[in-house]
Length: 208
Ligand SMILES: [Zn+2]
Image 1: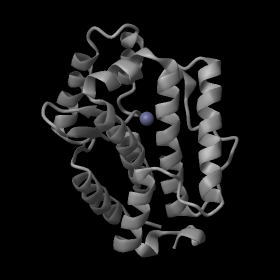
Image 2: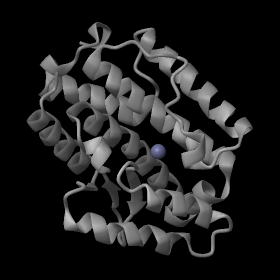
Image 3: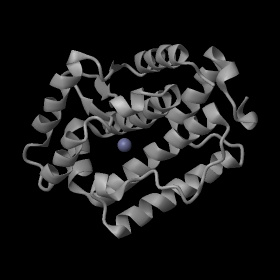
């Protein structure tokens, strides 16, 4: 199993390669960072309900948000940071959001994400696939297709939107249970980097 030290070192390395500022929960910056999310959401209809939930659950929720300038920041929750595997898994999940923000631009991503349940469902499903893949790499555990990595209450998804997110996630997890790397840049990046830097931590035999 990946050690705490290896996990920290690896996360720093991956954040640096993605040009992302990684904010760990014990950092003072984490407190300040919570407030910059609210600034982004001003003027987006329907945003406040989503944001309220995120703000209230800052101990359990990690998130990615744009910084003034070019790069994004990932704020790791204390729950995610408490375990070496979940730290790496969460960073992979958040770096998928980082890519989504970079492709669409800060404001458009905030509008889509906060304004549309369907787009939120899709964005979260993609991030969850990559997170589940990294978890599988580091533990070798098979994916439980009935698991619920997408929390409807947390992301304010309707039953229909949650159904969509679950089915996207399920088909993505089948890719790697069949021995193929899921078709996401971050999935390939994490797999390549683990093979290069910490090959002994890969527990999924198909991916060694
Ligand atoms: Zn997410």
